[in-house]
Length: 208
Ligand SMILES: [Fe+2]
Image (tube, rainbow, N blue to C red; front, side, top):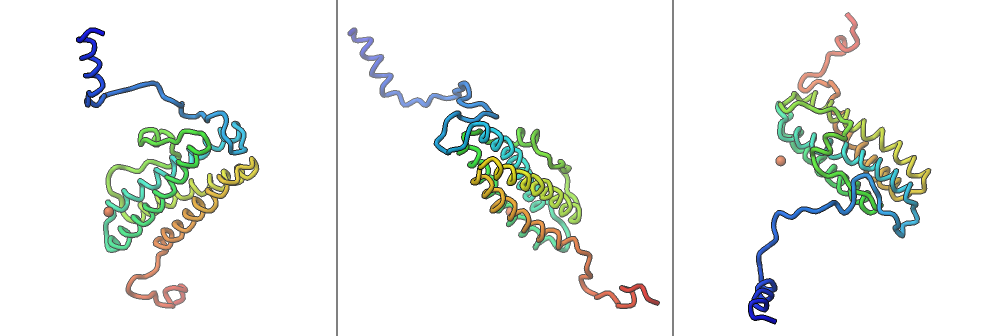
């Protein structure tokens, strides 16, 4: 081998330059599942479950972000308690997002991930960029929970019918129960009870 060629080989072996700006074809397209997995769940079942789980994922990511928006933008005399409550619910939704996304991957599918794709997919109404008053924040959160709870019940039943017990368990035990509990905590803030002065009995009953 010529000396020049040997030098070139040596240079290539010890080159510490990272290979930047690389792109290549996808290794798996969104909306597909890998064909054979030892899960005892047929491909059509995994295809249907991953499609429905991706819808649930997009809506859960949107609700998660709606909680952070509310956490930052809340105003008024209940600022402190709502600021903390919104962030607690945000953290719980973060857990759900990861559990749903990883269920899609383990079923052989591809999880939706980026904000732009989530925005195109979610069924939850888009809020304005600006700040809104507390009753509107609370109402938007409840509407979002309602969307997720509705589809959770449908998905859980379908998963059970198709024999996908793991998805049924995830949706009922984690997604549905967490959302139901959060609905309670949020909706109690929309009960119109006096803050300082109790309502007079005569006024309350409408008697003279
Ligand atoms: Fe914060």
